[in-house]
Image (cartoon, rainbow, N blue to C red):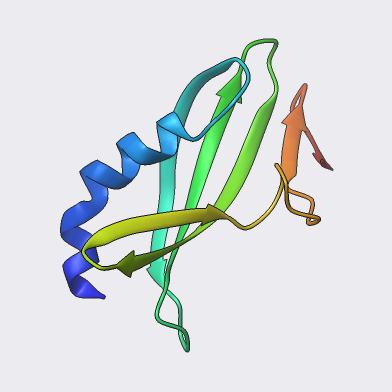
Amino acid sequence: MTKLRFAFPLLAIALMFTSSGCLISRKIVEINDHPSKNVTLVETHDKFFGGKQVDQFWQCADQNGTLVCKQSCGGKTNLACLIFVGGQPTLR
């Protein structure tokens, strides 16, 4: 998994293009190797137009030399992500 650490600039670009809506900014907060699976766990902090802020969680894996990331919550998943509206946390 250490070779994936060199792919973080590509990861940041890929994560920006996978978002939908009025995303203003995305910041990578934390990157960790999964303790038992062959994936890298990524947390991003996204800010949207209108003040909504969302912590997104991603699972990334190396597939034939390409870093592939899938959203772990929100979007098309059935798991809620933590969001902040007016400074107050809630689940989305």
